Image (cartoon, rainbow, N blue to C red; front, side):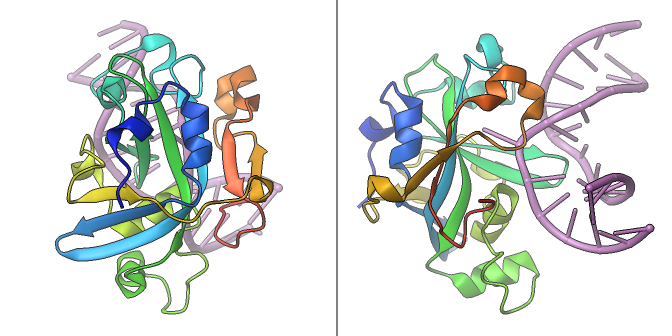
Length: 197
DNA sequence: GCAATGATTTACT
DNA sequence: GTAAATCATTGCC
C-alpha cells in the first residue's frame, strides 16, 4: 500500500524522516521493478545551513523542495552521484528527507547489473546515498516526480520498534557549521546496510 | 562568461 | 588515511 500525500505534507520533517525507516522505496524504471527497505534517512530544512534552500534561498535546482510534500527531489552531487530526497511539508516551505541507505528487496539482480560491482556484492549494493540511487535506477529525470505515481513510490513496510532506531548527526555537511550538529540522522541500529555506524 | 565547490565513492600511498 | 574523479549549479565578474 502506497503512502499518500498526507504522510509527506505534515509539518514536522524530522518526524517524517524517523517514520520513513522501515518503509519500502519502490521504482518501476522501464518496466524493471526494484525495491528496498529504508534503513537510513536525514532531515533537511530551509532553517539550517545543511540545506540547499537555506534561508529560503530558491534556485532552479531546489525549486522542487518548495512544492507540496510527496514528490521526489533528485540532484547530482560531486559530479557523479545522484541523491534522492522526499519533499515534505506544504507548498512554499522547503523541507525534505534524504534517503541515505536501503536494504535490497526486489530486483536484486537488476541492481547488481546497474552497479557494475561483483555478482556477490550484496552488502555494499545500497549502503550509501549515491549507491542506492544507482541500484534503484534513480536519476535526475525523476526529479519532481510524485511519490504517489507509477514510476517511484513508497509503501508501508515493517513497523520499526523505537528501540531499534538510532539518532546521530548528519554526514558530509561539515561546512554547515553549528547546524551540522543537529541530531537529524536516523537509522536502524545494527543494520548491515546502513552506510556508516 | 568563468571559476569555485559539493547532502560521495573509490582507489591508492 | 588521503586524494582523485567529475559536472551541474552557483555566485561573482
